[in-house]
Length: 169
Image 1 (cartoon, rainbow, N blue to C red):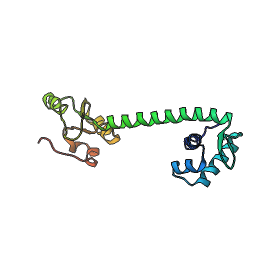
Image 2: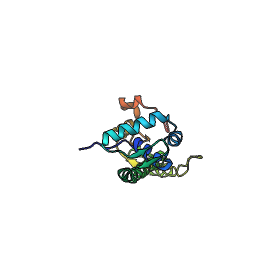
Image 3: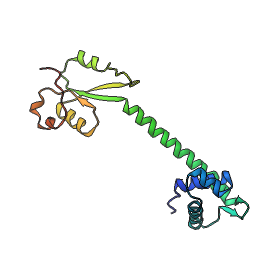
Image 4: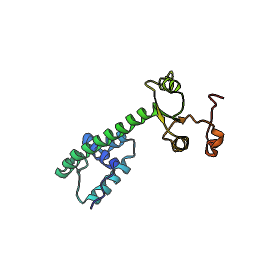
């Protein structure tokens, strides 16, 4: 089975097909023209057929080259869609905080905590989750919770390694 073709090389082929000139394509890709020519020659050797017909005056796509460009454009499109999805999810998760709290904690405080807004952070979501102290400490350590409220933190040695702020005495 063939492992696939690097998206970078697919982008090279697409840009050359659009420019029909290796020098112009290299300039657009911000690489040296000899390096681009070498990369395309290596790719053609790897796949076993030419993508371009080169002459001293012009560059043309072969039939296989046209098919390659068509599929490469789709691959590049979908790789950009994946990057957009990842960035969108990063932004959403960057504005969501999950705070753990013990079941016996004052419900009014927890409700108020869920309404926190921070200027400069649009649509900050604070979610609260009832958990027992051990679970809160584990989830804060592994990053599942942004923070947690624990009662009597000195009773838990693992709490000493975390940044603590005293809310009540």
